[in-house]
Image 1 (spheres, rainbow, N blue to C red):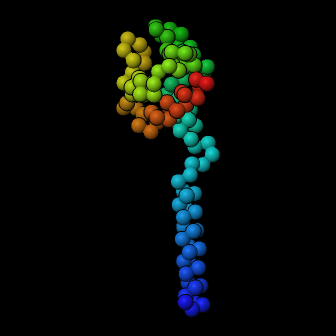
Image 2: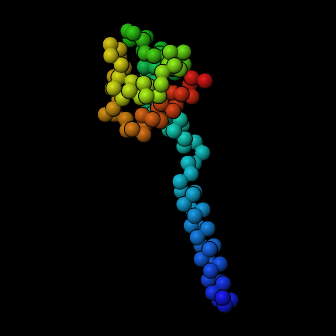
Image 3: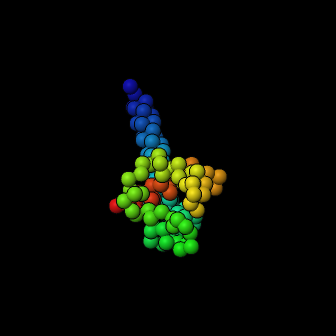
Length: 120
């Protein structure tokens, strides 16, 4: 292999590494852009009025039954699938309505991720 061919091979290898690093940087989530971080924003916009600032179901005291206390044992024992169904379709005989037309699938998952951080 001639010196020129070796230089071209090295240059090609370096370019491949730079491109790979650039792709990795594009796919890595920036700090503060986790599902739970995004879910907190959606939760504060959509869910906080009913569930309350402390997420204990004390947002609107006149709702009967009151909204769920998302820090409670009962919420912690529900599976992700159960909570996703509740977020998407609401909960019968409560003020918890369906969010399936207002939230995207990603937003719904992000809200669930945020709710899980409240239950520690």
